[in-house]
Image 1 (cartoon, rainbow, N blue to C red):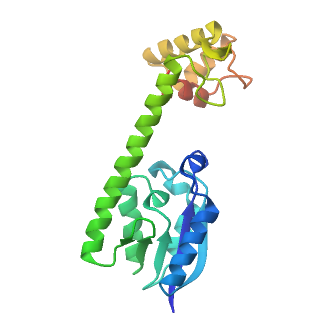
Image 2: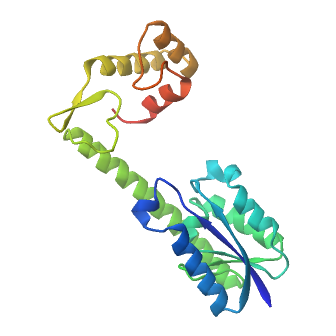
Length: 224
């Protein structure tokens, strides 16, 4: 009997948005294996982002691929559950093919065992990357719009703001700290240097006892 290995992933920050729970993915993969005459030997699970920078952390994807043999198939729910970029998707597919195995993406109807299937696979991988980039950009624009209107746009009040009568209002003290961070960065200071300068000046972050380079980086990466 042909053998299949399942792979599922849930990103904790996107699960609620997409409605793709671990159990839902398991159910779809199990049904696919039964309908196509495959013995589903195991389903591996990762609970982490699908971005390329997190690829090395997806240990269970690596385990799933390592267990593939000649003629086996790796089954995933959707292409977006496998990877978020075209490059990363193709790299994963190359690893699978090097094992003499193939890839099946149930909801996207991907079967890369034929030349035409591989061609369609690459097109869908490109579309997947574009869709994810578009979603990310639209989300940033929506959050920026809410911020500009003074609306609360997350469970946590962003650093530099306070909630007054249900509306976001700039916090003078924290806003001054943000100004200082941007000024020091413009002077060419490193993240660690900026954190040290803030700590020596007695400037306090929102929750931690003192600034760290990671918290400085967060301020710089997020819109004010």
